[in-house]
Length: 77
View (cartoon, one colour):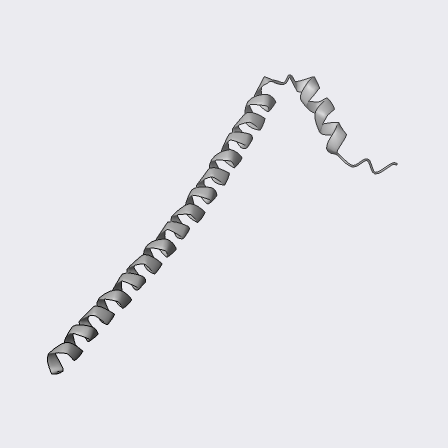
């Protein structure tokens, strides 16, 4: 009788541990997915900043001043 109870307890324990393993592997996968998305956004922002920096480097002084004037607030208006 006591042997059957131990067997059932071991089976139940194995089942619970299996469920916990599945749960925690899902949590880890979810965290990896979030980190991947954050890394992709970071790379996208770095590329955008590099593109803007490259574009500014190609501008002449007068064209850069003209573009800057579009964004500067004019106090006399």
